[in-house]
Image (cartoon, rainbow, N blue to C red; front, side, top):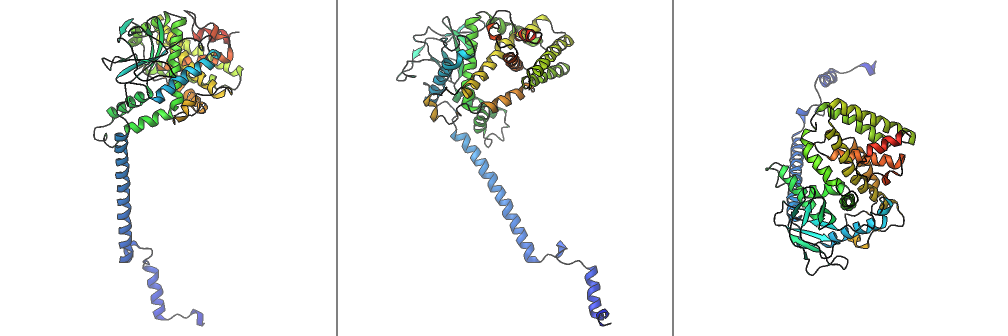
Length: 428
């Protein structure tokens, strides 16, 4: 039949095509022009990637040059510094009494410091220096009015730091007989963090790594200016603690300094027990019902007793935990609670001066920060310092808001602890 008949030449062609790969299937048979185009595209791609790397490196190095290495005009507060301080005073005066009786109206001056100067705001004609707590060490010298500058129409004061390593620190100090809160300026905080990142970066990478930009981004991710204002009020609350329980802050600090070297920070079993405890606290804070929160709080208290017994903690180390939760846990709680009030109180309006502060988000970022902080509770079991007590104290205070709303009328006594009030609440 005609359609089955194939010539010998056609048959040879078919057989050859069956055993020899086509040029489209065999890279070795790619035509010279196509190979040249591929090599040229590869060259352009590599060159483009190298150019991008060079540009990123250049921009990183440029960011280290353009972002400040020193506080601009260090001898006076910047307009943003003054706006943030004024907002902290304003926020506390408007909403502080909703958290702590009398805190909103308490006369608590504030200190800010940078690498060269310490500034004192809200304290007319202050006596010389400041007193470190604990230790009652007098530091610094006479205060002078900042020349040609005011804060909300009022004189504020400064003194040059004789030694940049001796500052009022981020805490509370005494100026004369008055408790004063203290914190670095945000500009100096950012510069310090950038310097720390730089110091921890390999010398070969330092010129290219954007350590100053990294510090700025880190502080922004941690809540930005809203968080900084909360930090100002965290330290203001320490001053409130000093005013209302005058000797307790020194007691807590001395206890911690004398016993911290004996605390089993590096014990794996101890950290594991702490992890169970912190998970129970975080779960209790996030509980859907009061009944569930109560049950989880009860489990936390049992686990706490087991952990202490397993580690054979003595009375001083147990007291260290309880006292630090009182001192720093309450301050951490207050820092976040005042932020929440600013975010949720419809009648509250920040000062107009903050409009020009692009890092300020009008407290609208509270929910995001709150979620981050609750998750942070779970990550503190291996912390090598007292910060774990900030978070265990924060969690207990938050639970007491839910389970024993009158707890704040009791906690400012000399010998009351958060876990005692929580125990009372779950055993009702």
